Length: 401
Image (spheres, rainbow, N blue to C red):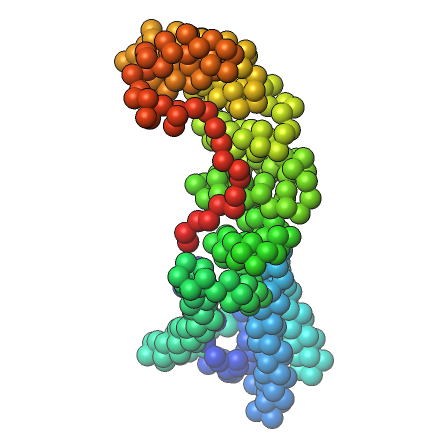
């Protein structure tokens, strides 16, 4: 089937007279009845008039073959990318191109019938030597190769621009150039997560916080439900930029909106909750933090003791940062007891838990209990301050590209 279509498309012959004296014109079909038969020999003058009309239609059809994909391409690169959208545009391209072909076929058939009378449908099969068919095929393959080269040449500058942007971000710190190049890139090429990441960073460095926020939102939408390593930076900077543009409360709301769009594992969910909780503590928005930890822990399978342990550790740490020392101590007591009973699995964690519980007791005025925990942790006095729960004020996260 494909071989037949290729031979039909590569064959440039539009008219021939068979051995029986019948005249056969080629129509616009690529399979099946590809010819229009007249059971008479058409004079060359009459046939020439028909073929001139056919060549005129072919010129218009070739123009449509160029402009339809170009127009659809530039529309496609400026809409939100999705697999459904890609399939839709491919379907639309096939519909429009074939519609143009069908319309040309209709005009050609009408022209033939008006000038030469009624015709019969038949197979367009001129007697062409094998060597000639191979020549036709070679010419057609050359055209395909030329088109492929043109497409590659069009796409090649995209890689050059990405490289220059990467160099400008990492080495030269020429952020203005990154923004300008990315604008050109997005005018010519499909959306790229990497380019959005670089432009978001460059805009942030130029204090264009609204533009940077917009880019982070776009790149999170582009990545769809998938959650990757780069998303940790994106979500952290999303919080930072939204806070810059509006308020910390709005930042948390936007953060929640985009997190719910992702398919997250328990580990990834806990890490996102950690980022948000630290942000809320820093910006004095404690409402809902503990409840979210409780909800996540209760959603776990009863046999998933590892995640229960680590999430409870995070919860205790956050409670300490919130100044809820009594609640934090209650959780630390449970964790220390469990870790002491499972030292093979949680021996390393026990060291830090004892130190954190010691600091908690110290804040509650239990200096004796604190000293006992510090001693049990076997951490040197010089190193001990490093184990006190703390956080640093959120800053823009700079990443390498």
